[in-house]
Length: 143
Image 1 (tube, rainbow, N blue to C red):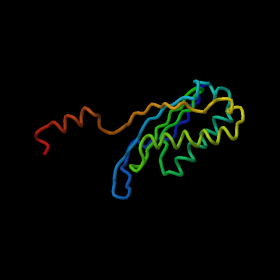
Image 2 (cartoon, rainbow, N blue to C red):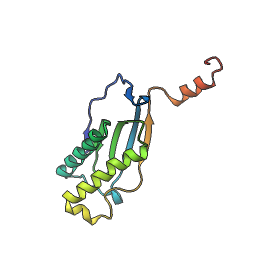
Image 3 (cartoon, one colour):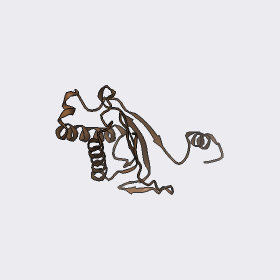
Image 4 (tube, rainbow, N blue to C red):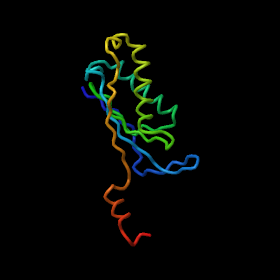
């Protein structure tokens, strides 16, 4: 069973205000367990604990998880984060805490050399396509 846990997405996205910055940074992240093991297949307690930890990281960092899927052999997160963190720092926060806590709480995970692979996929999202931005920048009449 492929568990999809989606949180409501605010269709009317608003800009967030930070010290010296206003904006919206959202990224779609995907990564897999070490050796592409189906860790979460028929293991609801592990899956639920992983989701709790993801939510804890987001709350601590004041990030917003807009959508989440913990599948048997991969994870999808759509995260709105602040401009003070890089995408690599966002990934490290989620993967690092889940790896540490889950390996402590579920001893069977100690058999793997690590919980997650070093790799991940990211795709930034926005309101306007790159094509539209290029057209605007290259338009001699905009400035």
